Image (cartoon, rainbow over all chains, first blue to last red):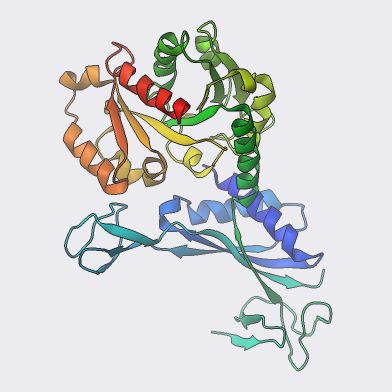
Length: 112
Length: 259
């Protein structure tokens, strides 16, 4: 359970970019291979920010599925399991093209 | 969808309904909203969530490099046998390699106590002590442990992370490489359930193999699952209890030292 640590980091980034304005919404993009539980992250966000400038702000989690491109046959496979095998030809000669994202993407700001 | 629009300064946002904010607010300091009856300003950030941790990890890595010490971050679930493996490791390496240990635990010095007196310098980090009871070591916690190690006099530092198959894998601490101890009592499917950890490491120590005759554990299936999530990962079969495979593990560790 490292969601609280992640929320501290996200809050720090939001503070760095809010330039004194009130933060209404923080958007994060998190890949499926990150093993972050979005509901837990949102819960921790509320708890962590009680009584701070970020109290009442919304954390919006954009969940990105894991996907691979097959080098052997060219097929694109969305992964249901983290096994890096082509869904078409079963080759393991694949390139992970999404699923490891871990970003704060944007903030919505209003006047403080 | 709400009213999506783009501002003269290049930012854009979407006024989805139901957020209840007042669109008559004065926004003159927040972008150019001329001609719009606007809500909040969207600011693009695109910053890595763990960027701050990674900057501290880079500082740790610089300290390791200037001291000429190699560092491995050793992770596992609780009870996989990390500490006993380290005891066996220190018994073998103490005469040839100067080893330091950063011992991470949520509470107690029990593991650190088991490792003292074996010729290594041990620095304990209790994550329950000022770090909010964290289930992992991050770069800042490791940094706090470094002043208690004579880095310049060491060849190898082994960071024994907090026992946990999820969180430690996310936090770089400045290490050169990562390894994990997995025990055969944990089940064949663990790589598929904890891909972040199994993908994060270069070496998986498959421990407690002395128990294999007593278990239904399918070693080949485990290795296939491991290869599916981390093609090319190295493995060594060990029993810290009997000593089997510990020399091969130590040879790999020493190889890090020489590299």
